[in-house]
Length: 399
Image (cartoon, rainbow, N blue to C red; front, side, top):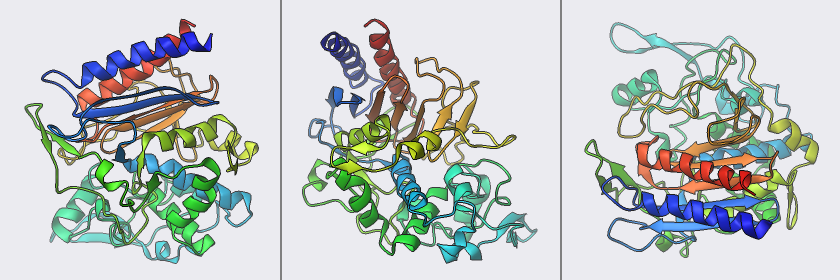
């Protein structure tokens, strides 16, 4: 039976990938994989790493952007298990710099930001749930203005100044997607006394056998790295040869900073399908996995559409418009069955250059889709990903 499922998934998914990397409306290249609890059941690559360049291969290295977040979140969950992190204590106890940040209440008549002290301390729980008050300049007009008029650096610089920003609102007030998980990484560093990349390598990557993933690419990874492309208003693609995440960042950005290949991320997805267990040891306890995947926002907090306020970096973007969505530690949770077939209670997320993944613990399946295109919410890549996920569930339904 499993051979039949695998054959059907291959036929359906190959068709999606090959159709997406040809024709006028195309993506440069894509790698997509599907796993069950035991191992990969589909792996495909199509197109090119750079238009006119080397072919896309399954071992291609991608800037995985915000799909980094769940890995950083896992290191924080380990701190909770070890009794070292109280999610409801002030986060400044572990990362003191966060205690210096103020709330921005708009701008005065001269264009200066109006700042005040927050009414309560940021907690690590709020950071993990994106309710602490941080945003991104490509999704928030106030941060965009701080960048344009006051020199707030972009998070892609990997600099400490890029996360030491004002809060957009008082902690816990609402859900807003932003640099929260970069601060979770700072909390973990404060607890462990090591850089986040070292913590990940020792406590996540080693037990899972993940080697082709890091904040700083090895000499072996660099030539296999895909180029990020810009989608123009006419639908055309331009290689962004000078745009890349820094290989030696000032801060190991838990929110977006990892480079990795898709087969490595599949090992991480399998850990969540297997209740925290990896081939070389346990990463999380089953009971931790059980609560960490559940939506934890408190109404009226809710996951909302992401407004693309910098068009070169993001379109308006939302998974499954019209369906209720929650947030967990640290994934989006769809509260209703999705049109793709993804069931209620499944988890997943995305990365800025149009990387997407999902983890369906109920059916024991998960997948990852990797392209390198800006802006986020690329209509070709995002639609292709939805078709890919749908193809997987159609194959499972026909088995």
